[in-house]
Length: 393
Image 1: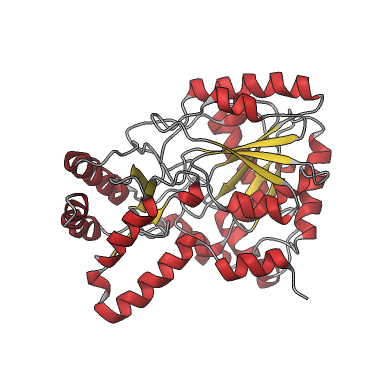
Image 2 (image 1 turned 120 degrees about the vertical axis):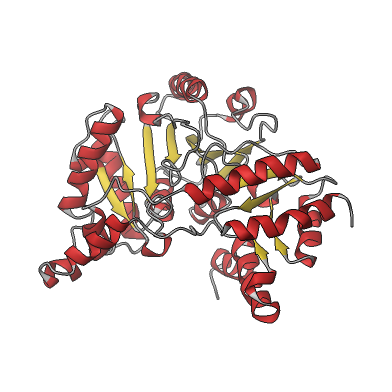
């Protein structure tokens, strides 16, 4: 006998990953230069020099500390650096004890979902378009993921639909801003209104309804757009973060859960996150990566190529007739399929060696996503293909 969920997830896999693997195989046949691969959000710019220097410095330190276990909740240097950085940047006071270090945002999210699931009546709410792995994280626990339909005009939040979705079994609402797949940043007005709604609904439910803020793209914004820091607007916020995108190190797997002290019974919540991590086999995040990032928590790569690619696409695709959400952050462009069916359009594109992700699993079946974290030459090569596709050629 096998675990049915494990078999299902392993057999089906991720649509994004499946498309990425197809692209690798196809490139081996026709050549990488013939493929316009927009499938995977894999950073295309190298990490900042500060990260390389930090790794070089760590490798000269005591090898037993560098390669040995850290505390399960993370090394002292990284947690202290995080407390200083976030206190300075966001005007709230944080201590090292507020941070649980994880192997990336996925592990952070999984731990939060598990910590907040007391029974099989538990419900989490995601706002479409949403990262499809939220469904995996909740279903694995026997909880339910309720999806609020997208506001397809502005891609902010449909508050009437969200309010109707919340009930006594709701344990948390999950937000992702800048958003994957839309690249949209929630406005300060949106986040403030969300906090007000969750306070009201928490009082009605008789227990805190948490906000899980999934923030791997927090530093990736354009044109001076600011991402509102959710704990400033709602006290029961758990922040899940990753350095995968801002330091261009997705393969190194490092992130954290932030449990602010304003959170209801924050020490118990922290213990539950730690216990949930233990339950899924966490020992500690990679020691050498923790110690290196501790030396450069505020470093950033050069994001010029992402902004250039974004601007090229925003100038060209709407002129061709595509309806695109305006991405003020992350490195994704989200747009409506010209003939209404995202999956069919992506198959047409695939036949022309342009790889875009159909958005049904994001909760918007009439849309598709492209990840423009690629060489600008790929974007330029794709534009005639996009024109041919919308013209039905």
